[in-house]
Amino acid sequence: METRSAKRRKLYFSENDQCDNGIDRISDLPDAILHHILFLLPIKSIAQTCTLSKRWRSLWCSFPDLDFNTINPLAISSGKYNTSSGAKRPRFISLKEMDLISQVLSIRDKHSYIRVLRFRAHLSFSFLNGLIRRAIRHNVQELDIEVATDDYFNLPRCVITSDSLRVFKLRSRYRGFRLPPSSVVAGGFRSLHTLSLSLVISFNQPCLLDLFTDSSFPHLKKLDLDACYGLKELKVGCRALEGLTLDNCIQLCGLDIFGTKLERLRVASCFDAYCDKSWVKIDASKLKVLNWEYNAITASSSLENLTSLHEASVGFILLHEDLTSAKLQSVSNFLSGLSHARSLTLESPCIEILSNRNYFTNLHTFSNLKSLELHTGFNKHNVQGLACLFRSSPSIHTLILKIINDYKIQRRQWNRDLWDMYTSEEEQYWQSQSQTLKPFLNNLNVVEIHGFLECENEVSLAKFLLKHGKALQEMTLCTGHCNYRDSLRRQKVRSQMMGFSWASSNARIAFH
Image 1 (tube, rainbow, N blue to C red):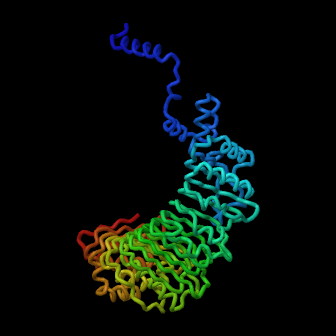
Image 2: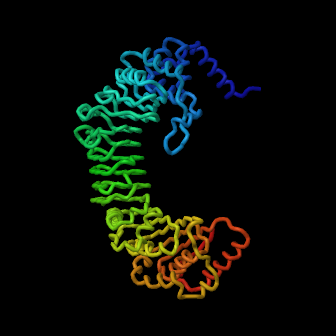
Image 3: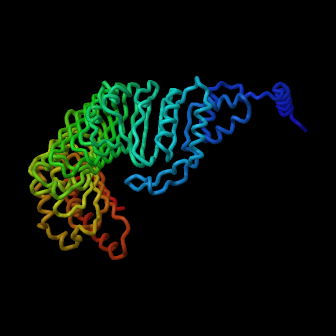
């Protein structure tokens, strides 16, 4: 027997079915809403809707977001077109699929604009140039292209003179492209907000040197340059720029960056390691994040006005030739320019340089530094470099030490005799530094040592921090997996570390 509420629901739905009378209400929605719904589908599925009716054909012909990378997105390209890193890339679309892109652009409503055009392809320059020109005629706002060509090609000039283009990303996987003459480039890109270029061939082309200025890029906020071959010097002075990334510019000898709004900077695998007069200059008062990764050491470094720096990570490529007094001084100047950082990560070559016997320069005090992360092989020669950093970090709260366990590095295993021998070399050194390290020891709260294998160097440091760290609250020693014999030795070391008085009554130690 039906209840009254069930009868009311049945009556309501039957009345609404009669009122609808088969009307297609979805098609009556505004174009903007339907475009948003279609945006959630792959490009092929969107194209198939044009067969439903004239209304849906019109929607397809005016659809603003054309992402052709959704065609076979999981397929992998051949190694011929992979980047130098060896990472696998989604494959380029076929010639048949390229014809699809050409047809889609040809049937578009003349008055419709393109918000996004994105594709990857292996094609000729003439075909590429034609596609870009059609997109520009439809006032494209974002061009995201990854291409491989059989020969070098020139960047189409229509991209430079476009008034509608806001985002332009061009990644050439093979063989690369050239920029037009500086007289042409300097007068364009007036509306661009984001620019990303990969595999730029700039031999005998000085146009990049003074290109990135306010006059050429008054609205540029993000700039990414990757694999600019032949680029010797680069100056970036766009006042609106907020993010800058440089990758794989291995022939770079000079870099000058000035930005009043620059907040994020990443430079990786850059600079000519054998250039005797290489230099870097950075002046960015709003810079918050700096990543300096695997770069060759420049002959001179100048980092100025980095007063807003929050997070910095530094890693160099260390060659035997880099241990000259000039390059040691350059590294010191670079690190001192980071003195306002709140969080600092240093890779192993930095510790090696600070530990070098020819290094006599004191670092500037990192007065704002609260977190320090160090990656090191931690042999006996690294102890002085660590002490140098500790002296320069009087306000530090957290110390993270990641030990690189390289089989080439000889490290002495800890044993009972070493524990009882107060006059061991490392123990004596740390005790001699107890007075100069007082500010560091009086503020240190948290210590993490990863790769802790109970070797002499790390045990001596852990013991020293426990004995003198008055503010220490937590020490975590991450040892990883070990065999039965190593496990017994570790148990002995742990019991010994728990068996002497600590400077902080609130300290806790944990083993992982």
